[in-house]
Amino acid sequence: MHPPIVVISERNSAFRQRVEVNGMDDLFADVPTVVGGDESAPDPHDYFDIALGTCKAITVQMYAKRKQWPLEGITVKVQRDDSGERQGLYKLDVTLELHGISDPEQRAKLEEISHRCPIQRLMTQTTIEIATHTV
Figure (cartoon, rainbow, N blue to C red):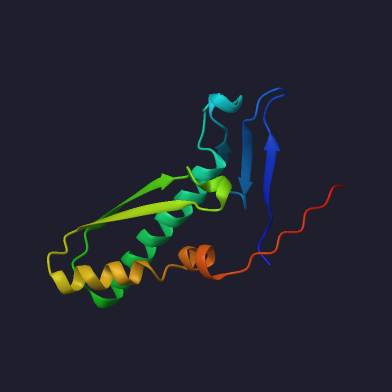
């Protein structure tokens, strides 16, 4: 089991949260002003989308490195359409910009590999159970 992630309210009457992750630099989360936040940090939806984008980037980099392909870097753009979220539909459109890869077959293979990143599998193929308790 992994060490817990700890979320601590930063201020009274605001929604900014400090996030502690296993001794690393703290992260922060907030919500948009439209729902009473200060927009001082990414919101929880942003972190969900960030998880997918970073996982795809890392997965592609690892594969290219293992194959010794000339990938110099990757830019991943994640575009969210949450207009149907209340009806159960959350759309993410992901664009991969592969720097240093010009071979069409390598590009196609890296796109295919990006679909196998653990976070995409978690988001699309896994049943997640959440238990919440007060202390």
